[in-house]
Length: 162
Ligand code: SF4
Image (cartoon, rainbow, N blue to C red; front, side, top):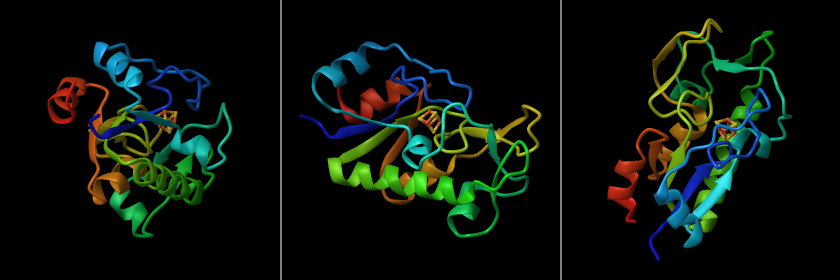
């Protein structure tokens, strides 16, 4: 069996997003990996005790996930609430699970302040995207786990095997 793949729970159809919705992705490789026992599912934010639904959160303007991981800057809810601690815990939980279960790869929903790997929102809560990654994705990458977004399943198939 190939190495395991950590996967966003909302991508697997779990209704765990801030708005109470899922963001299911359908792909034959996901079915094969699931049948082979290669998928390890987590919602990092829920693992850190965040409720469903919850307020939307974004990394504050001018800061990156790397800044958050090094103690500079905050992750804020749309009402200004500071959820930096929860987002750091979420990332640590995901990394711990990935290590414990032998995940070499992660397949994460893009755009999330936790799971994003190609883009995130700019911190103004106005729907503007910018290149960047979420806190969990950044911590996984920094620890040698190859992170793919939901738009990169073919690339993940090439890397992880069918
Ligand atoms: S933290 Fe990740 S798994 Fe959880 S709802 Fe957000 S994108 Fe999905």
